[in-house]
Amino acid sequence: MGLLNPAALYLFAIVPALVIAYLARERPHQATVSSVLAFRALRVMRGERFGGRPRFSWPFFLELLMLALAVLAMAGPYLVSRDNPIVVVLDNSAPMQARMADGATRFATAIIKLKEALGNENRDTTVTVYLTAPEPHPLGAPLRSPGAASAALDHIAVLDAPGNAAAFVSLLNQLAADHKIARVIVASYRPITSAPASRITAIALGEPIPNFAIGSFALARDSLGAATLHGRLAVANFGGTAQTLKATITVDDKPSANAQALVAPGDVASLDFANLPSGQIYHAQLEPTDAFPLDNEAFATASGVKNIALLLVSPTVTDGDGLKSIPGVAVTARTPDAYSPTDLANSDVAIFEYTIPKDLPPANTLFVLPPPGDALFNFATAQTAQLQVTGWSTTDPLTDGVNFRLLNIRSGEYFGQHPWMQAVVAGADGGLILAGDRQDHRYIATGFNPLPYLGKQNLPMSILTLNLLSHLAGLGAPGTGYRTGEPWIAPAGVREIAMPNGSRIAITGGEPFSGANTQGIYRLAGAAATTLRAVNLADLTSSDLENVTPLKIEAPVSRPASEAPPIRTPLTPYVIALIIALIALEAFFVYRAPRQMVEA
Image (cartoon, rainbow, N blue to C red; front, side, top):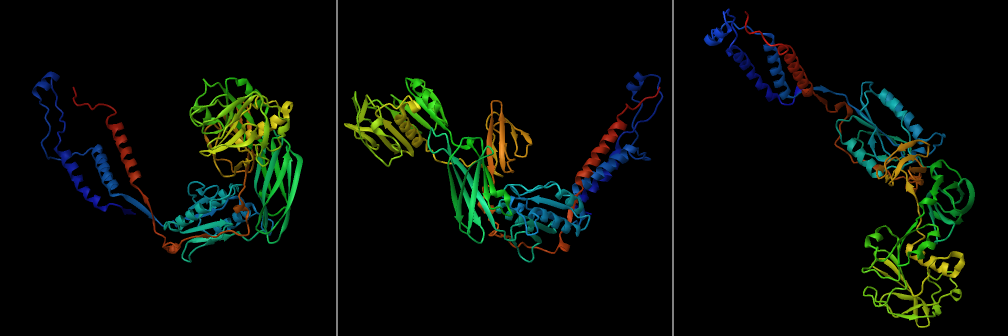
């Protein structure tokens, strides 16, 4: 036992003051009087003089004890123990699922070896268990014995999430520098390099394993109006020889497409799947199989494909009704009087028909028959009752697949020379379609009206309209879904998330969700509908099981485990608690009933 502030013991000098104060106080004296009034008037009952034979009552000794305990609390007593606690760090990241040469997974082997190591420890040693995925964190409070730690290891599951190597090495450096820890036992597939004096003991589980992996599974809509999707897989060969990798895509459990490629060692190839049918869940399976099956499959959903939010500003808002029939397009219509620039905040594409905004729209925008003489775009137009197409760019995405000879264009306007927009389609007296970029946004102007959208009833014009909107929307950008271990915000209205294993978690829309640690399909249920989200490992660094960067532990100023510094357990909180208990005890007995000061 020791004291943090021994000088506080000098305060014991105030203890005699309590005795003096007790002797100096007036003590009651019994007297028989004929009347209480006379007693009060004559005050015949007087306190005894200072000194005399002391008569200490039990409250005096109780108060003396409380005073002594208060002085002791200020001195800061503590108990000293040499527990030499140890720390176990278990890697539970996705690569620990890889099977070793004996067929057992790295994670199962790590549990067995950790239990063997704990079995050699003193049974009174405390053990703290840390996990590494998705971020390093303690399993809970320190466990009282190695036996309790071994039992806790049986309830730990390996995740489908990759680990954070930088955070992992930071944790190990912190533990290695903590002189209160006698030893750190680490079980991981990552090689660990540390100084000889370090207290870190590594259990090696990272022998090289050849592996084939899916890096990402992306779906995209190549153009608006297309009922099919374009799939793209990134596949990698982490083996010693070239290998033909074959992938099969199923849509809602129905085989739909397959592709293959010869991939050199260490290389990544792309497999394309054009015209995938419409469906809900897309599942990719890679062959040949290997010792790490987690990254041989991946999931995607059609809901992950980017949809287009389109804002139409027009005096005839019904011109936008046909656009609502295009797959992947959501239309919001406003009249010029009702339009506000804030409407563009939630819009991917804007269409201004017969009107021009006062300020440059901060969104990719199509201007249909813009009025002449505006100060913003300075369109120079010439009205005509009969337009005639005379030329167009054959390599521009706006004109791809459009037969301009079949376009039924009547009245409209020709554009004159524009300062920064170029003519993509030209007519007899000027430009008919102008396109240009300004402030990182795309702008297109047409001298004729492609609306309303009629689909197959006017196929050449419909193809042109889809080209215009596809270019403005930047289609072709794939939706790759989400990665395991990464938190995301639950969309508004979501009340429950169904996990890939079937379990359900209640959640409020707008709250962060950090439980996506399993690869598969997550179902986000709301009051109106259920949304699907695909979550994949999608981490080729974790899939490279042959070339793993070692974790370098900086050499701390260390000492042998037998010389680990003692552990101090403060006793001050317990002393204060005892003082409070004594005060309550005195109050209960002393003030339970009023003292009888006068006897008749």
